[in-house]
Length: 379
Image (cartoon, rainbow, N blue to C red; front, top):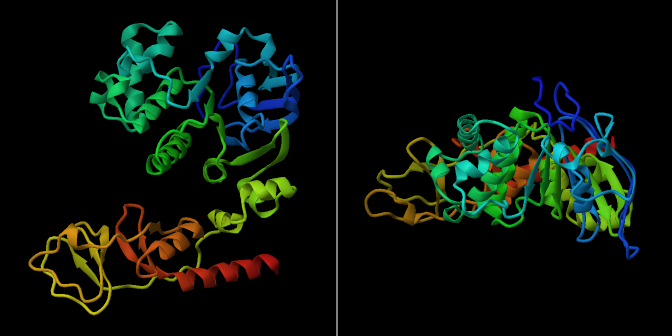
């Protein structure tokens, strides 16, 4: 683990720091309590998600870490140091911050947006821009994007720039306030994957706020569920929150389909993969009596041909039926069930890490495997 470059207001540390909330309360002058005696420890190098309904205090709790909101009472510690011992501006130089809509400067290019924090920290312009260019690549944006202005980017691209800017000074802590809520579901899933990939590389201490329990259990290593009034209702791993809700509020918030969500934490060992008839895009096809899975030249699934379909000449994408989600082998059982249920054939398509076809799995076999897991857990 490398030595992080901390802001002046953060203690120098090897690796990511621990964040502690000790009896932290935020009460406004009108008497409204936004956060009520919060006690919680965010472990170093983990993604901790604050989740709950609107008005439950999750964003207020997040913003108290970088002193954008001051706590009324209690103590917040970063690696044992009280954040009130640091000037707010100095403290924030060691804390990355990502918000909805990215918050980019519209009059600056993407490259200069990302370079903003290093420049404010005293870096020379050449070094700051070099760091910015490196980070654009890290978050999955092509180098030429650096010359564009925010208005020329899609919502998902803007959020990637926002993440890059927050990482520009290599902060040990990253605060993310509903950063992906304003983009469409497909882009949102891509951004979630990107965040998990980045965390594997960067090992930051990340606090992430969302109102979406699916997002919380997907990316969080620990999940803090808040109820209205700023009360912490439950704090645990995603699996613990889904399987053993602390009370009726948590049970209701995670939803009646929490058993399905819980499959995200059940391994797929024992999944039996079958084979099905296949054809290749761009090659002749004479028809078949049953469903046929069509692959591209590299063996990646493109879609299905329905029973009895005939094609004049070579297969083209226009003749295919969408195939539902793909299941990547070795990933949790929820993906296998979703793949099977979303397929027009009731058989999910199984692929390897490169997206290449391995076989198919039926919904019946997935359900049998779920039942076996359930029996094992009760034994």
